Length: 131
Image (cartoon, rainbow, N blue to C red; front, side, top):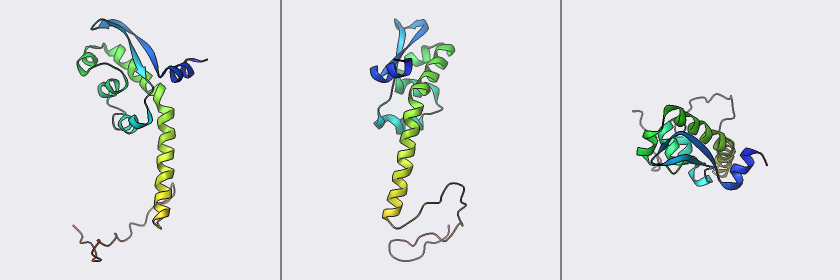
């Protein structure tokens, strides 16, 4: 079993620290569950908060990491979670298309410019005012 498959099986992968943080010599980087992928998306480029989401480290412990350890953990978070996140995004996009279709609308296809058409009427049937 390769390293990523083993991490998926276990639900995490250990990352060794170059120096202990509160007595911890390694950190478990989690494979995030589906319900956490929206939060992963929101924190995608925010290294300290993403590390806090995907490990059991507190904010204070994240602040105690060396820059090298922080970088390695951040990269490991993406290594373990980017593919599941990408699949989740595709499913979310497909669900949005189906929802629009259910309401009798069509979403613009990739690369198709929108015409900047008129906005929808308000619930009371009156046209919306331009702000």
